[in-house]
Length: 130
Image 1 (cartoon, helix red, strand yellow):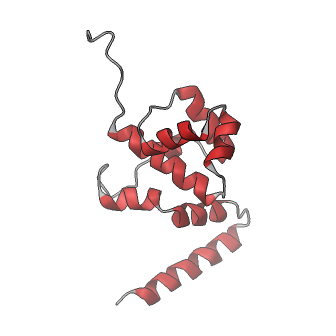
Image 2: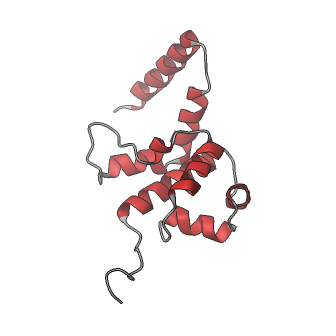
């Protein structure tokens, strides 16, 4: 195969995007089947996207972001203070519980309530430290 005809292989970025999609999907209680039906692909294709085996086109990524009610940038965002490939960054985005917490927190519109919830979470975290 020439360079022009060579298939595009999935990259680390594709795997990162896929794992973030999986975490957000799970946090919202959606199955791969439901996500697939919503974006016009099979659940097997959703599995390939989430595992980073197949690349996701821009239009389809936008459809996924719309369904999950997040900006497309969510799939590319890095956590400040960590390198792109660090374990802490991938753990943050790969943990469905973290994504569920973030989704619930961002749905709170009252600023006072948001501040109180944040205070509760910070207090709970400080109690867990040795």
